[in-house]
Length: 161
Image (cartoon, rainbow, N blue to C red; front, side, top):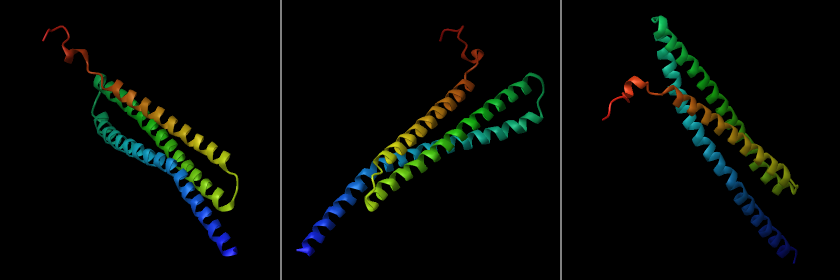
């Protein structure tokens, strides 16, 4: 009889671990999304840094109105770099918080602790950080879009085509 009880307890424990793994899948999917967003931001940052290097080279050889245009674009690029840097920071902290959530779920199971509220609060914090990063990403893309406005003289709106 004690062997049957141990076997039943093992099956229950195995079922609980399987359930914990299922619970941990949702945060892991969020981690995948965070990784994809970080990849996008890293690529944007690389392109912005390349553009800033080109502009810094041009900066030395310009004067007057052309110089002012270069300085304006360098300032905008500096702002975009800061926005992306903060967004990446928030994503990293969000990812680390998701890792804490997964660890809490397993600690709760292995140590028979009640950590549901702590894990839930950590997950809410992680999602909040992710949302903050996405807002910064939106601000960066809006800044980039504003910089790419096509001057009126190129549109030739006075002509009917």
